[in-house]
Length: 181
Image (cartoon, rainbow, N blue to C red; front, side, top):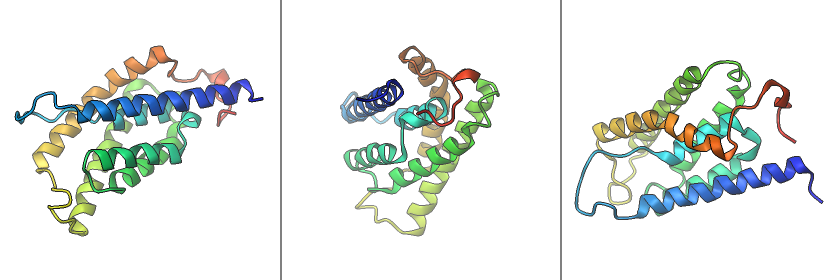
């Protein structure tokens, strides 16, 4: 029999995977075929970082890596590159999350924004250094990546607000038995 804490952890992990799959499927839908517009936010990254800050035990690195690898494959990005960068960013945020527990949301938002910017920089740098052929995965223009970054940073508070009613809130000081068991 699973303990109540373990049941909560598995339920949270299942909810994360279900929401991530829904976001991946939504990204695959042809909502405006033929129209090239402003790139939208990367909601999967915003959701992952928000989840890691709020409930780090519910999203272990293998789960994040598997979801991000699936997104890489289905969205025709270089397989594994985005997944590796996402796992490194999430683990960086997880390691420093205990320090930010007492700080306000603005500090959390700025930390997430800085991490998202580093993720974009790391992906562009690695894709350029390793000369990934454009036939495999074309490198988007820098302006498009910057617009996506701005949209993702702007969407982060909305993602946090949507996740809050699902029980994803910052733990109170009494709940800070790091990590959850």
